[in-house]
Image (cartoon, rainbow, N blue to C red; front, side, top):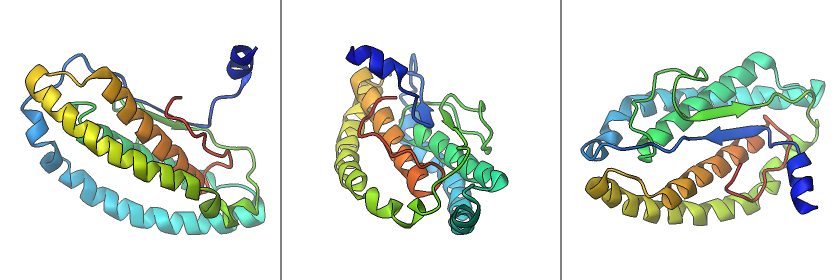
Length: 197
């Protein structure tokens, strides 16, 4: 009965998947952080704009109960770009991320469903409701630093990211993006406390 209920439940409106790679470069792990610098410069400025957009969206939601479609595309696109770079930097993929926020340009898939309407008062307290998630994500972030260190050596010697560690890293990235989209006012669906889809 529990399985039937779980399968009937609608999927969470923020989805992130990173396919497991067959093989990873042993040499690339030394320079990925350096190669990602141009992306982080651009993402820094996009993040500043995203802060302004979130502020504008706050008032749009307050008065219209909608996140303006063009602003939503910008917000989701910026986060998609960030996810692509994170998948590269966290050693999950070897393909260099494109300088693009379009879907389908990178193996990491990040999708967000646009809600028909949003609760006009929820943006006032989302930051408060997200505090338990932030506490858990700090602990998970520390754990991912440790498992990434182990994975770095595994890739160096075998060319493979250990699958359980890979799934854990993707799960933490997924959880983090769900909370980010929730607190960025994109969705009203409270993020689940889970690593899986």
